[in-house]
Amino acid sequence: MKPRIHDDSADEQEPEAPAEESTGDRRRHDRGERRARGGGGRTTPTERLKRVRDGVRGQLSKARGVEQGDVEWIDENGDGIPDPADRDDARSPGEHGSTAPQATPRSSSAGLPGFTVAVLTIGGAWLAFSLLHELSSVLAPLFFALNMLITAYPIHAVLVRHRCPKVLAALITGTTVIVMLGVFLGGIVWSVAAMVTQMQKYVPQMNSLYRQLIEQLSQFGLGEDAILDKVKTIDPQQVLSVATSVLSDTTNVVTMLVVILTGMIFMIMDTPQVAERLKLAGTVKPRVARSLSAFASGIRKYWLVTTVFGIIVALLDWGVLLVLGVPLAGVWALFSFLTNYIPNVGFVVGLVPPALLGLFDKGWVTAVIVVVAYSVLNFVVQSIIQPKFAGDAVGLTPTLSFLSLLLWGWVFGALGTLIALPCSLLVKALLIDADPGARWINALISSRPQDATASGRPDR
Image 1 (tube, rainbow, N blue to C red):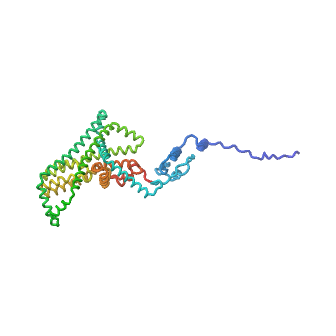
Image 2 (image 1 turned 135 degrees about the vertical axis):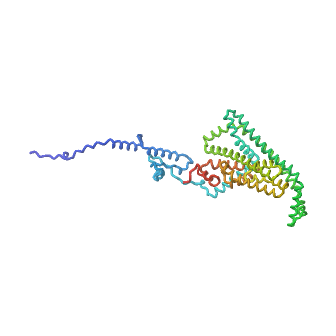
Image 3 (image 1 turned 45 degrees about the vertical axis):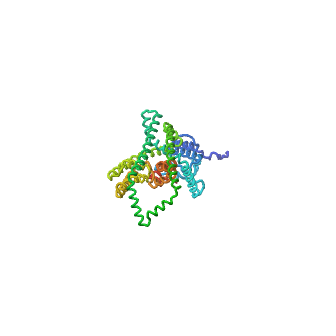
């Protein structure tokens, strides 16, 4: 018998054929391979959002000057609450190899100490205001003329809307402004001339009051001889200096009027292109353009509200003066209306002439009633009622309004008291409202603290 040879290969078990994959398994497998290769195919909304997010992060990381900590987290869960994992993911490399921007803390300066920044800021502001003060004879009249044209610009818009040529509409608008200024200045001159003429009739009353004053002062050891001795010590050179100063002020007023009229002529020539220029600027600097548009709208509201309430106060003052029998009641009412444009202290300037005339014509009681009536009417109308209507236009706290009056009065002189609030509004529009990072200052200076968060993000 032949020996039986054992075949080891026969003992090896035949490999079983792999089970046929289901259709769903193949699809998942293919989708996983495509995802691994970064290829196309159907993706879920979450995956598409991640790709968009990674692309945005890549662009932000390459852009210069972009704050890395301002990347918004995408809510992938759909529950309205950012997932903490998303924040961690944003600080780590992306799924497709792109490096996400790293969140860096913000700093208020480029490595400078806060005290140094404060000193530099204050010094720069002081230099800027000093320069404005030196150029006040030119800048203040031009800015006042700009205010008048901005206020009258709706006339130009209405005329153009009714198919009036833009050049003709600009001429009509400019003529209206010039007439308004003429009425304003004419009213002041007429009021002062009427006061000087009327005062000449009360020379005896002035002498009587002078005698009464001397008698009162003599009780305190100040006799007439002592007062005359003080008067004799006055240097005539000082009187000449005062007269020269008055003449210089008169010359400055004439120069100011010339600058206003000349500047207004050139501004009228530019009026037809204002809308197009502002729209073009908005394509490059939209925030600045919006701030300037809001400033112009606020200026128009400010002057309109001031005019309306000035008329109301003037009519009330006129009624009080008529009841008391104070001479030239209509003149003092007009003077009160004109001085109403000076914030905070304008009513005091308009109060002095009628109070003096009431004193000379009727006596102390009438003068006191005039002072009390003017003060009450001014407080109720200008301090309680008017701010409710002018708040949207001015947008500054009463304290800042008063400080603006002092600051711009020093910078621009007498005309600065008229344009104090518009100047502050312009600075606010350019330096605060146009910069989302600086709008938090509105919480301190604005009459609407909610403007601090109107368009801007809080620090993270």
